[in-house]
Amino acid sequence: MTVEVNAPRVGVVMGSRSDFETMQGALELLQQLDIPYEVRVLSAHRTPHLLATYAQRAERLNLSCIIAGAGGAAHLPGMLAAFTRVPVLGVPVQSKALSGVDSLHSIVQMPAGVPVATFAIGQAGAKNAALFAAALLATTDAKIREKLDAFREKQTQAVLDDPFFEGHPQAGGM
Image (cartoon, rainbow, N blue to C red; front, top):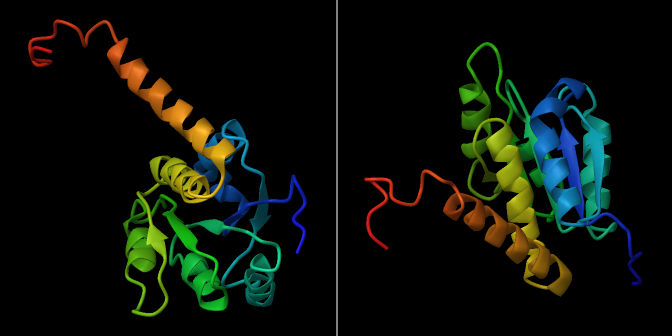
């Protein structure tokens, strides 16, 4: 099977357009790391047949993983995982009613046999899911590995360059 050079490697799915604000950080990181991705809005409750079709085609498209952000009952990541062998990375979207704790519990408490890797609630979780996807791809892709290493080095250097780091009483001796 020949894979298109710019074919998506990661699927990014959200339960509704209102989840975009949370998921935007994941998209920005994937773009920064030059990881081709595709974005879809799918609802486990309002478009279950479309969700099943997407999940079933994910493997044929050679997606390495699917990042799925969902709020409220948050069935989206688990339903995707039920329909595909492609790893699903669940991002609980912060909700107004229960601040995303309901979403977190829904995603993290999957029954044995239907795994979903689960990340933090909100934007931090979306960004970490993208970085996890990059780490997953970096095991077999040298270009992504180099980009991820550079990202991590830059992140470390930003802390070291902080003017309050050097000489801060709690920083300790180096």
